[in-house]
Image (cartoon, rainbow, N blue to C red; front, side, top):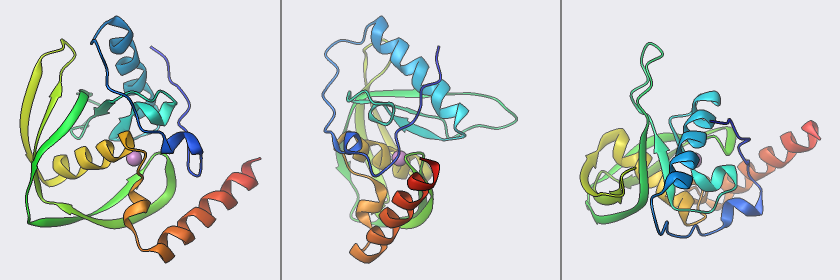
Length: 170
Ligand code: NI
């Protein structure tokens, strides 16, 4: 298991559309383990493979981190089957968009399907934080960041801030 560096915006690699996993094998399970390690090391609650430079449709998430307990979940080839007309707004952040948080409106409830680590197809209904996080992470698989949901002005300000902090690091 390895902690891998997380790519931050603006970086063209984050705009890649990730490709479907053909077989859930040991390589994918290793990727999931690395993703979990990288997510926890960065104090995140969710991560898409593309954020560590692997453009495959794999997500890890842990919304239940209490008292240092870890309970990572993996979602492989996730797909939204249904989304509610009702919307919900949460303040979002992203490990690839450091130091920026903003409100994003998304469907409040979704039904989704994915493959688990054994390659079994699983269906789930989600609302609240889980629904929002799943949609946020699934956006990554399409090369979309949460700031892409903001107004043009807010997005431009966010990109400017990110570019500036990258220059300071360089
Ligand atoms: Ni994100």
